[in-house]
Image 1 (cartoon, rainbow, N blue to C red):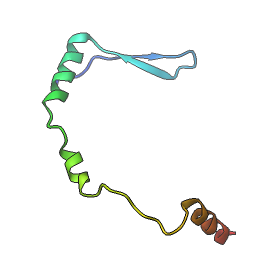
Image 2 (cartoon, rainbow, N blue to C red; image 1 turned 30 degrees about the horizontal axis):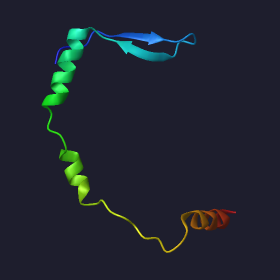
Image 3 (cartoon, rainbow, N blue to C red; image 1 turned 120 degrees about the horizontal axis):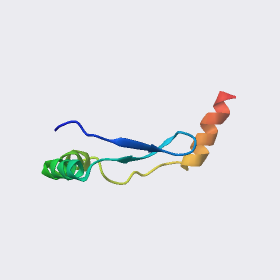
Image 4 (cartoon, helix red, strand yellow; image 1 turned 90 degrees about the vertical axis):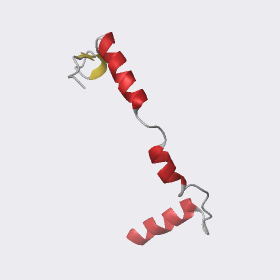
Length: 70
């Protein structure tokens, strides 16, 4: 992909808030993103999907751990 000619827009404090790029470059970016295969990372993560069952309330457990620190 060729370099992107971008213009960063800032607010009154000089913080970046948006980026302006030429439309034809935006179309190239969209085309490149659409050509990527979808779902490959999601398929790898699907094996780990599910529900966990906890023996303790998570907040109570966190409080117990924090009490041990003091």
